[in-house]
Length: 319
Image (cartoon, rainbow, N blue to C red):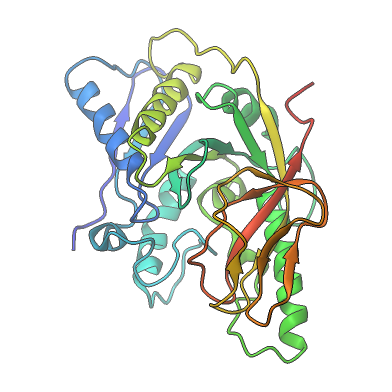
């Protein structure tokens, strides 16, 4: 098993500190391909750092990457935090990764998704002083989000996940036999941890896992981020001409491995109020309660884990 690897560049002129991560999930390799392309560009002089610092992590989870699967022992991008008693491989990753994230100002975390769909960026909440996810860098996130090279931007992750945990707790208290994770912090991944450490950043979903265009989406986002942050001497990227902003508002879990979708859903397919999304093992229909979009549909989800999310239109990026 390979050791953890990061490649760091530092300019003589002060500036932001950016970290770019790939393969947090081992079967999501577009970021790895894109990072290695950028590293070749730097090595061959096509890209030169003129200010600040940038760190590249081509393979964040080497065990999962070597196995070609989402995780090694568990999902690294859930309940991410250092631990004094590492038990699973991802605990060792977290103990190495979390201090590295905390040393930076901005994170670009490159991912892909299970079913076909258009690339999109996930951002944090608006500025707030709430207990769940207090934040004060929304304007900076918004300014770069529209310049990453994608037109669709999604927020609402952690609040939606925490609400889903409350429903899990209710089911568990009612005598359910599923081994469910009942901690709201289970929704904390790389970007959420980054924000808790005072930074900001993005999860960029670059396309379906095997989409040959996904590495190009990831590469363009890295270059655009470097240019926007003025870390390289390049023209600042223009914002997207048209932005589709969406907010997650509900997560639906599988309750049994035999729960089935009504059809092959793709991320951001529209669903009408009352439309059949899937059917539980016992025949109970699962319907959309309002007009919305389906996000991250996962027909291979395990019982007790996220089956799909729902999102609705937001006016956050239209002002």
